[in-house]
View 1 (cartoon, rainbow, N blue to C red):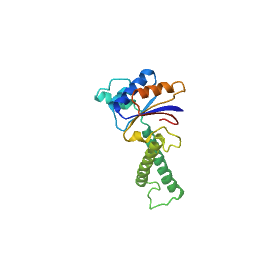
View 2 (cartoon, rainbow, N blue to C red):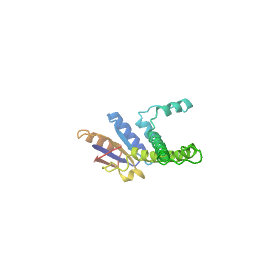
View 3 (spheres, helix red, strand yellow):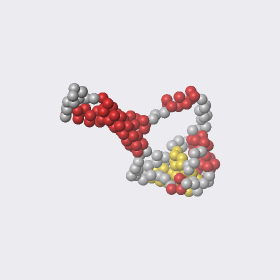
View 4 (cartoon, one colour):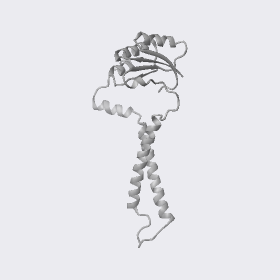
Length: 188
């Protein structure tokens, strides 16, 4: 998969390049920034108005979000609870020991073990879900420049064919890009 990566020194040049690339018809952009910038977000969203800061808008945004890590947490919780019940009921049924008329299967010890293994399963599910959804570790070539994490801004245009490489490079150079490189690899 071919992409073009442009590196910028200033945020204003980055925002101008995003705007020019959008006007030229390039939609698949990935922006690297060492700091969060509202101007970059605004340029990427085509100038959509911001959501109003009200309680209803917050609830609507929360309902529309797809929370993926929560699924892994709940899966780990159910796995831990299932393992706890399997261990406790299996132990009680495999080696039944009568204790002076008390029931063989007693709820207080089962509740304790269920709580502990359920919590452990939820925590491990959350960690595993985070690692899985972050696509860690990456074993493939990734399009990235080490200077983008410290003091430079970057714009990568995804899925560029050989005819449009010159157009993208021209737009990035016109907007004062420090360097423009064609890269092959994974771009998230």
